[in-house]
Image (cartoon, rainbow, N blue to C red):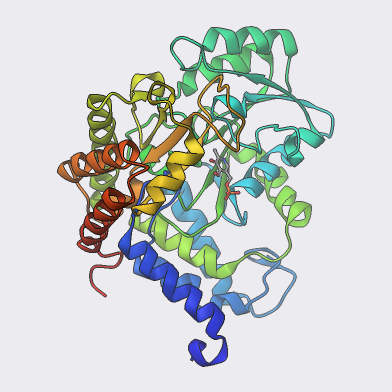
Length: 411
Ligand code: PLP
């Protein structure tokens, strides 16, 4: 028993489990995997080394491992309509690294969305490998609309002539026009990498346009809206398949995490069901409802609203900062994360924004009417942030409410 062997880790596990049950988690990049996905992540597939690819391994004994990886690849291709899939990246960051390594050389130029506008670290940020290996230039969202200004992207691309254009974001609440990015990439002679880490679930449910037929490379995580195990995925056209595969192994990884690949295969199968489509629709409905309810309470939302699973609150009209709101909301059991707003006057450790998302709450079965309650608790908490008694009262209500939505209802 874990408890007897390692009581410290056992205690942390029990505490985390209780915390997940008792709180409302609104972090847009988090989710709850299905029981089957969870089971496979803890399965004996982890015992096997399998460097290489199905049929071409550097280890013996890979018969069943090969079956698993082939199934995962086939399902990924069907799910996204892709010509080639690599399911081995250990994370979204490694998915991006492998896509860059497939066709870029150190010192090449990439054009991506600035992290200050909602881009990701691996999109050329100066202290990330992507900003160290490559020359990065950035586009930002428009100051007025807080949405991507495609004409600005085009102008920068034609002036800078990057070798690759990267689109996709960690904090962008609007539809991304992949067709426009495709046109810009073709006009400027750049490869196009679309990182759908956040929106992959919406893409497979047809609730966000797919970039798969347009981009040279599509990268993703498998653990956000896609609701699979923590990991990465790359899709590409057949012509890049060899370059991509060899950029992962031997390029940047050794043995694949076969327990995770088995879990990815199950998650892809789950994502092919009508229930998954309904789930994705509910994520958006919940997100839009929560957004509207917060707007009613005079919270300004970056870009005025949301088309997807997340949005960012601009806290400046309330005289609040992201870090203090994150802390105060955690006191009552509402888990969020501070986030920069576009052109934020505050540094990243403080921020003027709070990022909110609904994939996890939706997985627990929460619906639009629950979003109204949550908006009210957020508002009451922030208004009464100095009043410990009121905060305690709200915390009790949040805990009671959260426990009505079990993490695993059938357990
Ligand atoms: N790309 C985007 C757009 C992301 O938001 C993230 C994670 O937040 C990643 C890549 C990296 O994923 P990982 O944390 O698995 O490395």
